[in-house]
Amino acid sequence: MFGEPLQSLEKIPDMKQFEFRPRPSDILNAKEKKALKTDYRKKYGKIYREEEIKERQVVQKKVRDEKKIIRDEFLFNFFTPLREKYESNMD
Image 1 (cartoon, helix red, strand yellow):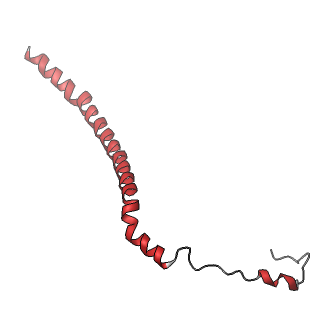
Image 2 (image 1 turned 180 degrees about the vertical axis):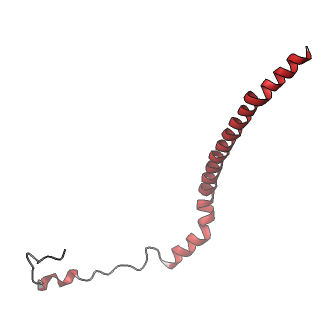
């Protein structure tokens, strides 16, 4: 990086044509941009809603599974043994 250059080439005069290459300022023209701005809800709204529903379902399933684990733990470790003990004392 800070060493001495091994070789250097002089600028070739015929290569000047490659120094500048014009590029468009944007891919879309103004009319196409305006059309996209007005129609994006119709085009992409359904896709966005479907993705949102899928993400919400994943989160709800995770919450449901966590609640089930807590409920089962309560039932099997606390409620059911107390109920069985109470019912055995009733007889």
